[in-house]
Length: 185
View 1 (tube, helix red, strand yellow):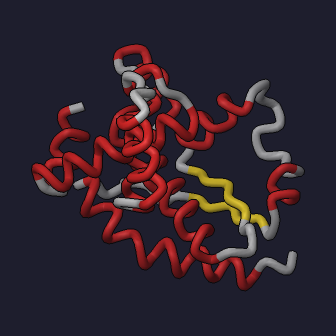
View 2 (view 1 turned 30 degrees about the vertical axis):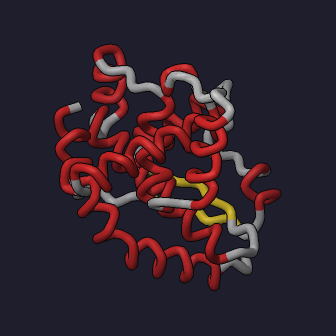
C-alpha cells in the first residue's frame, strides 16, 4: 500500500539495467524474476515470505531457487539501484551455476560449492563496477599486510575482495571473459 511509485521505480531500474547485466554475465534467464518491493526496511522485516523456514540462509536459498527478490526502498534511489542490480545479478548467477528449479539447485549444490567472494564479488562488481570503497579497502589491506586469502573472507570483506578480483579480470582480460569464467564454472 502506498508503494506504487517505488514499484514503478524498481521496474524502470530493472529494465534499464537488464541488458547490461545479461551482457556482462553472458546469460539471459529463462524465467521472469519476481521482485517484491517494500516501502521501508521495517516492512521487509515484517514480511511473512518464507516464514515456515528456520533461518535467513534458507529463506535466501528458496528465494534464489524461485527467482524471487525481496528488497526495501531506503529512501535513496542510488543505493536502491545498486541493491536492486546486486539482487538481480545474484539471482541470475545462482541460476547459471545451480539451475532454475529447487530440484536442480539441490542436486548441483552437492557438486558445486563456490566461495563467498566468488558470488558476492561478481554481484557487487556488476552493481558497482570499480568503486572507491573497494579500491581504498584493497589498498589499505595490502599496505597494512592484513589482506587474507579470498576463501577466508566473509560478509562485506568477501564482497570487496571478490569485487576487486572481478574488476581485475575485467580490466586485464576484458569484460567478455567474465561470462566465460562463469560459464566454465
